[in-house]
Length: 278
Image 1 (cartoon, rainbow, N blue to C red):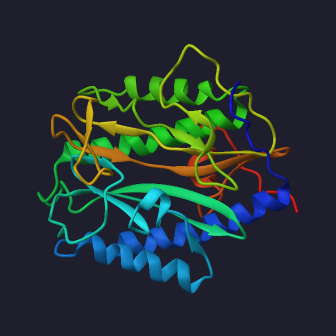
Image 2 (cartoon, rainbow, N blue to C red):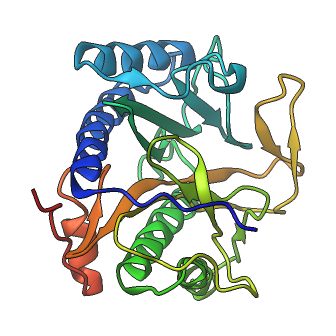
């Protein structure tokens, strides 16, 4: 029997939206602090101070023993990187994944930032392409969620978009997926970033998902480092991760971890997000 999918009331979704708003600001502040010479541990401190000052609790810290407020993954590190003494360098591909809790309700979101610019000769244009395609694929998946009947339609949309891009083919990581979110950070259902044979969970009002495509420039094979957390590409190729927490309520879709509910990204795709009714 499959795991039960949690359906939230509008009041509960509103608490998730409050947590998502704080998380959005925390990621803004953390990424603004990211620069060559800064350590990933210092970024962890920025994030921690931001959410704590606003009354939110961390959901990454001590999760199955994880020691940070954020995951900070650099270059070939795909996800679950532990923040610490690593000093960032020009040209690095940095993934910041974070979350927080308000009134027992969770948020989860991730972004990729390139420390440099290809126009200035301080970043690889292929890394910028990787991040932009991953980001755009996320929004294709979110747009699909707005009208989908089953969760696999999200993966179909992401895979179709990624495979349609010109240039060198990017790999979609298969070992790690998105997930349900609500009263816990990781819940049913799994949200695949590629098409599967099964339709996936039926989408109903009150469902909230963390959609998070992870793309790589090379092989999709991964290893876990000796810290038992950090996931790296086996071939050393660089990776990107983008993630938002999103809900479907009776009146529409709302991106809980986007400042505008996702309007600026979704409206060009033909989707108008609707605020959670009071």
